[in-house]
Image (tube, rainbow over the protein chains, first blue to last red):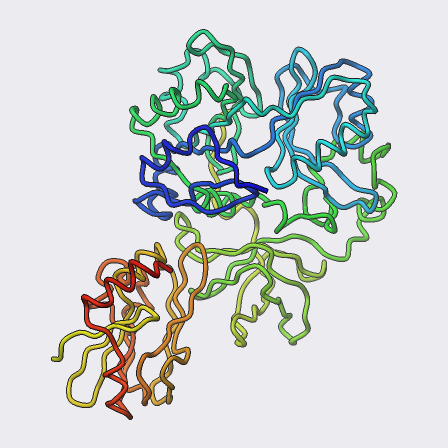
Length: 364
Length: 126
């Protein structure tokens, strides 16, 4: 398959982007100032992320659609309010996760944001489950631009009036250059911010306006360090087809009614986990020294038994230390538990940690 | 001190008597991005030309550091272990990695001049 480019590809190049192939796209991994600078600027000011590679799906329908979607997505779609967003996932027969996603209730039905690497498969799964009863579109003419950081609201308000009144995990339709854009107050950095769904034609115009307001362009490199500090999962690493939402510590994302009633794909498989008989749990991990434990590193107990493995690990620029996430056996999951990480043949002490590593207050 | 020489694994070498000082090139540091972790060999260890002698990690990934010279490690630069960011600031100066007692001086002849290395790095960016 030929590598795809987003509508902003040439603009990224002009801003000094270094590109990497990611999920079939040529995406900026960093710009000239580097990952650590980009990371810190997002936390102190505002950064712009082109996330147009992600899937933007819309499905038209009302009550009947909510009932059908609930069979594959374990949230309470009968309770979701107009313009409210919820984090959830597509579960599989084994109780694992096909993808994690954000569902937003809109006037015509639901908008769903999907991971780039999963979007085509997700489309097949969702349209298969809905049996052609509803109009479903995976938009190719839409870009997605995220603006993240404490100054996001004041900056975007100057460009698109009204956005600053949005609450976290809520969205609305706004007008930009005479076109409708859909904006949610959400993101993947642990900062306040917005995700703007805009036509490919207008994306460049908006991106240039943001940059002219002293917003820094941010690549996938800093996106990864930001989300890891915020304790957020990266699909394909921290969660995948064979991790279930309960052991992934994402039980909070399944509404109470759905936990009790089930009625979604894979429910029977995760029922016992829901009731507390988990074998493993996703946790935060802080190496004691400077050592960085990356995906695949084995985790050992104090008495040298293998108890799990790392799924993501890096250096966290804002917490100024190495950080990681991984799965450990349940009885080693308590924050403060001493563990050992085997990196390049040597065992290094670490402690199980609370998540997130970095905490910020969202606008609620 | 001798003229600086360069290896195909993107290390630089300077010679004083029978001691070689080795670090990674400015080009290598730029390619790595922000260095956040450095692991150096132990003093007294014998290393072989083109063998692994250390590790540098950026936020993105870990990379091995090789030695272009065979010999015994006589000194290591603890300051870059404590402050890995120094590797980006002064890679070909204060952020040297280790010193080696040279076993075989003829290995030096296989290294490149600055002009040749710059050409090589342009053609082999990674």
